[in-house]
Length: 291
Image (tube, rainbow, N blue to C red; front, top):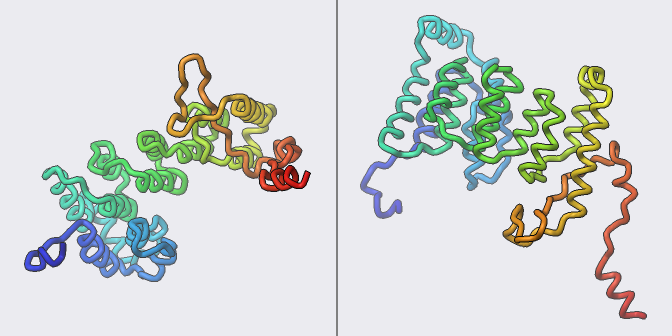
């Protein structure tokens, strides 16, 4: 492709973020690239897209690294009802792409999200999400989760739940239910969505450490354990799902129930450690041959 268009100038959203917007923020805000790389844990393969997203992320804690003069200028602009200039430019660029029916690459959308948090423009961020200027993606779900759990922004929890459901990030939904103390809703939600990626040990550990919840309802832990045991019993009794037919049932048959993720739950469910280990089919065949 480069050989065919070598005489032209093409600047993608990735180029704009990596070579224009991000370097400008680094320079004008006095951020340390080494600190950013350390905070973002850029240890992934450089050829992967996730590496690019991590490398150009502005972490939430970067607010604390800002130069005092830059922070004062931004505060003055916000007090005057104006958004920081660089944020206005980036958002205008994002909207121009959407006006041409070009879906912006997620590296640009994530960068806009990070800028809004960095400059304390949570209200603008809420509007961008509400009007779908920023589109649903797993990366934005994780950012919303961090905003809700670390910055405690009121609207972020519901926004995170809604987007996580739309993009089917059910583990994030379960984690947000834990964060809001809705322990009794976690297992029914996972059963309904047939999600087995979420470790139930996280639920039990979080509930055990929540002294207020267990004090208000002394039987809460037993109730949750009963739900988990019932789920496991239904999964053990249900027929195995055919490949490509998960959640579907043929006429006259029952729906297959996936087994819950009980890794690390032996502390609360001691019967798990008493179950017989799986039979080694190779060893059984050898024993039969010798006989």
